[in-house]
Length: 224
Image (tube, rainbow, N blue to C red):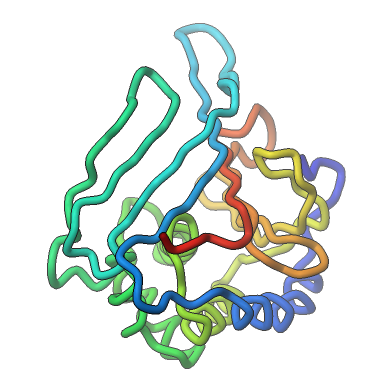
């Protein structure tokens, strides 16, 4: 789980170009209607007076409309969720993760960072909200290669981003994590050590306790 390896700002600097190169290798959507993404996910639960524990890892599948205009579908084997229909994207929201909207994002890292700061929201610090948005964009979406390259280069410019040399995703795969700590909570975006392909995310208290959540994703999301 990455314990015993102290994050390295120097490592973050060395990792930046490799992550950007991996983004260029992403598969681009052509004339398709839906993007399919399969993940393995685990959430933590905590009862009053007891320590938090990580629930068993389970499968999550999602089908998303490429242009955001069609209903999607979520299947997640947790709490009898079963089939959940997903509403189309709300028009005009800049951070929509449908592929057609992602095609309109900046391809220059500095402009991308500016866009991330402008469109990130939440109750944390501005830099952490920006880092969280990066995770949201890569988590369950298919990014155009040039946009993906700009996104990861921009993420490397966010203050406080460090690298964990050895972290583990929900499928047990070891990778290198781009991580940031804010308000006692640590978020890691995990990449394959050699190819730098995105594997998954991990959130946990910054010092002790089990992960608050873990998710892995196969490296090649497939349009269907």
